[in-house]
Every structure is written in structure tokens, then in C-alpha cells.
Length: 561
Image (cartoon, rainbow, N blue to C red; front, side):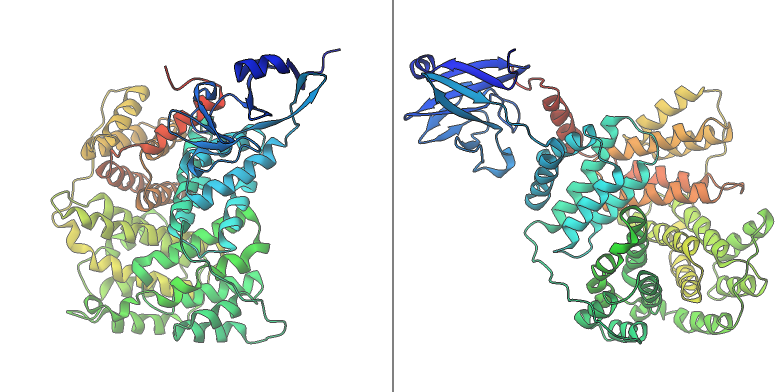
């Protein structure tokens, strides 16, 4: 019986021709004779599939003519890392015949190794190919999340790319087609790799063996902006204690780094849900430098002048700290009243409304949800006559509020209640960005579901902000399937070159939309989302092109003519 793993070719034929191409099991193998040695490799250049039979051999190096990638004939290793390593096969000469042996290879293990290389060297196409191989070989999203995050955070700090990666994993809970999963994961992982490429590595300390006062020490170290002592304290804590300490320190000061630090912490907890809380010490330690060095907004003059919001907020917090944490849900009327109060142009009333609600036994989780809805209104009503950069101002408020709500879902605490007051303070400071307010859509059309979805995709991709808003409202008010709408928004994000803020907006919008189900205004976060997304589209769509190339290569299709 023929051994399907063996190719046999006369040595004389290989010597005479220099190169011979043999097809075995659907794979074209290139057999090369060079300076008395015989080599065998996949005929396709691993970069973009160009036939290496058309290449040049110089001094044991095989050179592809398309992008001039160079490969060591002995083991296939490339000298041009963007090209990926070439697949080679074992050869031997027996009785004047060249015997080529197809080595059995663990495809999954090879793909993991290649993924790590793609991340370390920030090579998009290598990352995309690895994702395809891993998904085709059954890796779960949680296992992929663990592989990427632990590989990166052993040597680096938390970065916005890891936020994006975690967001992508959240969005992939919706059942998207394989091509869109690949594209989303490429966005997430390439944003991680670009953040760590050629950055200095971090050496994390060993945990302390015995210590009883770690939480207080940790907060003191953060207060003094002492990074390494704080790292050692947090890395010595159990996961629950670590989260408590992180939440306390994040809310010891006002709206740290435009709210980014709270959002980073929330994303870390979401990632830990996927990769396991036994990794919490490393994950929390990776955020310490940013936490310690963050901008503390009580030091920002606009929080002091013309209204001393810091004093107002601290006064209200001191009233709330002795109150019990309530359990009551806001009904529709109470939600409307509280949101309207939070949006008032009054330096005191919004904070007083929060304190009154706490005194009335309202659950702080629902107070944070009301803040989320008020923040969604702020972004949804952002008028395009404002300076374009101010999209980010309302965006920060929107994302912060969602992160706060998500943390409250995990555990209610007085420290997080402080975060509500901080969020209300920033909401007040953004009020001028709704003067005049953009008009929220109220029209219904006679279009069917397919027509609205098609219109929405086109509107988001071509900066038709008002049209995108109308499409979302029209779709939801007519009670078409919500998943179809959400998947359309996700695809509209993925097809572009995903940025930190566009990913955050889509994640926050979908999260708050789901959290507000049962309230009349739950459509507002999605209006805010598509307005922001359409304002920042289209882009060059580089990642879409990369994935198209990688998919064609995985199928053995030619990219050249």
C-alpha cells in the first residue's frame, strides 16, 4: 500500500532540473537541489502564496520574487519576519532516489507558536493566519483569550489594546459568521500587539508570603503614586481582596484619566471571567502604573471654577456614607425623573437627587443605570456643530457610566457609590455639548426589516449620522428582531479599522441597551452608538483586506495572476 506521507523522486531528475514540483495529497511540494544538498518545502510562499518554484536560490537561501522574502532552505526559517516561516519537509537519498517525508505536525501547537510570534513582532497577516488555524482546529474563545492575555501580560502592562480585545470577545457572544469572527479577533489582537511592540518589558515582583494589612497599604502606596510597592501589595492579595482594593483606589479620586482607569478595571474583571480568576494577581498588577500616575480630576480647575464641584460632591458623599445600600429598582417614572434631574443645568441639584435616591432605598446599581441613560442622552444629543474632538468628551462619559454599572452588577459597595457622584460631576461639566441638542428621531417609516438594515449599514459607513439614528429608532420601535440590529452594528464596527474609542462605544451601547430593557428609553444608547460610529467612519479598512488575504491563503487560493 502506498504511504501517503512519502514522496519518491529520482535524484538524477532533481539534479538535472534543479527544482522539481510534485503534488501529494493536494499539496504541491517543491524539491530543490543546491550545492550537493536536496531540500523540500511547500511550493507556496508563506507570506502571500506566490509559487516559490519561480524564486531564486542563493547560497542556501530561497528568495521569493514577489516581496523578496528570504528563507533558510535547511529549516524554512525566514530572515524577513513579516513573511512567516516556510514549511519544510525531511529529505534523504536512498538508492539514487530522493525520499521526502511529510512530518506529522500539531497544527494547533504550531498556530499558537505562530500567534505569539505575530504578537511579539506586530505582524497582522501572521496573526490573521494563526487565528484561522486555531479556530479551524477548535480552540475556544476563552482559551484564545487566555493565551493572548497571559502571553502579553507576563512582560507588559495593561493597555488599550487589551480593552479592545476584551470588547471583541464580548461582542462575539453574538453568533457571527466565521469570517466576521476572524476579523473581530484580528482587530483585538493586532491592537494588543501594536501597543507592546518594542516597548520595555515589566518585571513583576514576587508576592509577599505573610501580610495582614495589604488593602490599606495598597491604597496608601497608590495615594503616594508609588508603583512598585503597590504592585507588590496587589500581587500578594486574593482575588476578592484585590478587586476591593482596586475599586477603592480607583474611586479615592475623581474620574481618573477621563474615566479610563475605571473602564480598564471593569474590562480586567470581564477578561478574568473568561480566563479564570486565578490570574487576578497578574491582571490587576498590570494596571498599577496607570492607576498610580493617573490624572486626578479634583486637581483639574474646571472641577473647582466657577462651581466648586469637588466640595459639593464630597459633602453629598459624606451624607451618603452612613446610609444603607438600598435594594429597590427604579420604576419608569422614577427613572425618568432621576435622569431629568441628572441632566439639569444646576451645580447642586443632580448630586442632591442621587443622595435622596440613596436615602429612599434605591439600589445603587439602578442609580448607575440612570447615570448610564443620562450619559447616553448626552452623546445621542451631541450636535455636529460642536468641535469634532468633543465627540471624545461625551464618549468618555458614556463609557465610564457603563463600566460603573457593570462593576455594580458584580458587587455593590460604598466605594462604587462614590463613582456615581464623580460620574454625575463629569456629566454636569459636559452639558454645553448639548447646546443646542441634536434632535432625537421620532419618525416611523413603512420600510421592511431588510431595507432598514441595509440603510443602516450604508449610513454608518458613509458618515450619514442622522440617517443612522433614524434607522435604529425606526427598527426598534417596530419591534424587529434585536439581534439582527446588534449584529449589523457589530459588523459595521468590524469592517472599519477599529479604534479604542469606537470599540468602547459599541460595547457600552449594546451593554446599556440590554441593561435598560423594560424601560421606554432603552433605544437611546444605541442611538448614541451609531451616531458616534458613523461620525468616525469610513476608515481605510486595512484589517478587512488582511483577513480577506488570509482566508484565501488558508483555502489555497491564488492571490496573483
